[in-house]
Image (cartoon, rainbow, N blue to C red; front, side, top):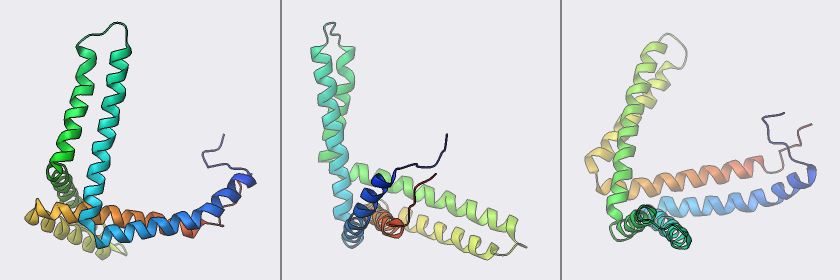
Length: 181
C-alpha cells in the first residue's frame, strides 16, 4: 500500500485541466484578501458564524426528532446557536482573539528561531535562521502593540497570502503530476 496519491490517467487529466483555472481563481481571491484584508477577515467571520448556525440547526433537528428527548440533547445546539450569534454580531471579538493567538505564535516562533540559530551558529545558513527569528519577533511585536486593531488586517492578509500560495502551487503542479505505478 502506497502512501502517495495514486490516480488513474483519466483522473489526472481531469485534475490537470482544472488545476490552472482553480489556481488562478485562488490567486485572484488571495490578492483581493491582501488588498482588502478587513473584507477577508469579515468574510471568514461570517463563514464561521454560518457553519455554527447550520450545525445548531442540524443538531436541534436531531434532538427534536429523537424519541427520547432530554434537556441535555438541546444544550449543544443552543450553545452553537448562541456562539453563531456572538460571532455574527460581535465579529471583532473573534477576529481580535485570532490576532492575539497569531501574535503569540509569531513571538514563540521568533524565540525558537533565534535559539535554533544560536545552536546552528558555525553551520552555514545560521544567519538566515537568526534573521527569520528576529523578523518573527518584530511581526509578533507589531501585532501585539497594535492589538486588537491589527487583528483586522492581519487575519485577512494572512488568509489572502495563503490563498495566493495555494494558487501558485496548483498552477506549478498542473500538468506535472504523473501516475504512480
